[in-house]
Length: 464
Image (cartoon, rainbow, N blue to C red; front, side, top):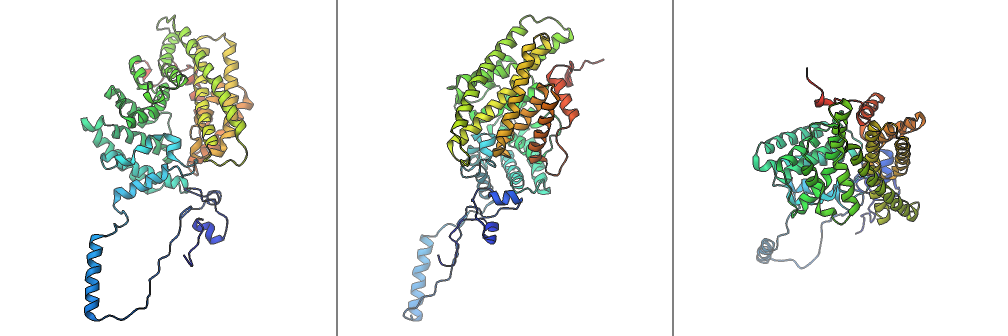
């Protein structure tokens, strides 16, 4: 169309006549300059009033023609652009999980593909609707470097109130949509930075909902995807939060998911991880002198060896994918996406390997091999973090967790110093002008907990 730019550059690049890579939600130039990116990848249209010349009509002919035209419009009326609040919210949310959205800012890629099923469930649960609204606003501010605004906090507070209402309803409290709302608020917490402590209340709440339901519908793909995503955070939360107490049967139900039934090593890893919180509880009881547990050390060693075997397999897969990657490979390339997934899984297994090592070293202090393996895991995490920078910020949201474990795993001051530096760089993506990153005292507190030096953590402290 004459007079309309044919390119799809954003407003900033078009105005400055700069080349735009059209990445979404923010192009590389706007991201680098910390500018708000508007219109990236969108085609522009310009509508002009049409002026024609023809034979003049009499008043009767004009009236007759208008009548026919109005009748045609009534029969063939084109619907207007969707403008109600629910549709606008759904469109905004879809933009955050679309496959065309940059891997570094894509919510579904980072937090789980259960998000793909959320739009069709909007309008059925008020807690889910409010949580989506809060998450979309927080994600938009995060991508445009605007920080935490009053609008985000208001929407987050409103979502909490809606969640309380749903939890007071016996039927809605057990609905998968309510559980999804909890998961969305857990994601939102990361953007607005209110989880200063070690524990995240929403993850504890999700665990309580899962425990109260006592089941999940294996025939419901949405629920399977949701539990598949949520089980990792719940297991990790249980390592630090004594309020999360599942029986062995409940842990087994949580970690067994039909969506990963075809990955033997995946099931094996999840079973190992689900037994880790009870292992830590039993180990503390032994160290306190509450009684003997002769089978404990052998059970932990069995799972630790199984986890190390999986780590070896993942390391080989990751190395094979890295050989196929070349500089400049686009983020949407399948090889790059496979690399990102393997990095995330490998880092998570390294982290749990470190925690297994901490528990074993507390029970078997003469086993020097465990210390050497933990030091190796620490170096692997550090190397992984340095290679994963291309996926910042959202694509590396788990890296700070891995780095904290790496700090705990080693006593080498030089390695710890390197970990602290890289950790500060990664956490800056989320703090941006707010309170500084994890302090040394906090790292030491986490170290004491993971190495079982605090025999009475939180609610386990004895009463006078």
